Length: 173
Image 1: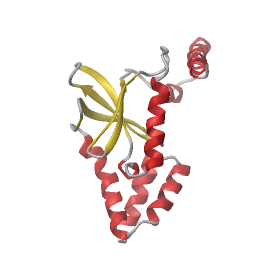
Image 2: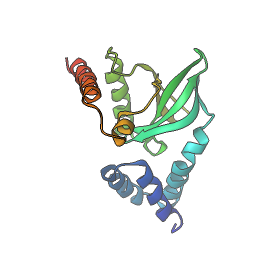
Image 3: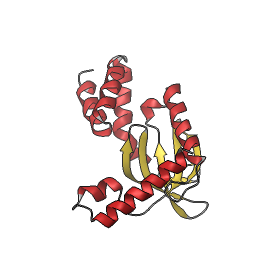
């Protein structure tokens, strides 16, 4: 029991922003000791377990990001021979109907849009009790990475703002 609790704190804290971390950790503490150990082990082993794993026709390659609703991996579509991004709902949420519904709603909302600055959803599904969204893979830096470097020249900042505004306008029509 004492071995699992401190380790899950590190695992959750590395994966989630502070507000989500505290909500998850409160939920975690309400679980039985054996369930806490299971959650910890699932959290720690998930990234290692997923490398090389297949979700239907998608093979997981490497982790490329994470957020409140899941972890994103670079993957490969073995049917169409193309790179994809695969977002996976964390295992600790796989039994939570509210989280699964939010995850699905996210995919449905984005898939209803067709715009050059909005990612294309290829598929939503589940495999081995893990839920996933397969999307197009976009090469290059994320906006967060680009903004972390040197200040943006005005022209580049304006181009990014125009693209973001165009996507937001399309999403809210």
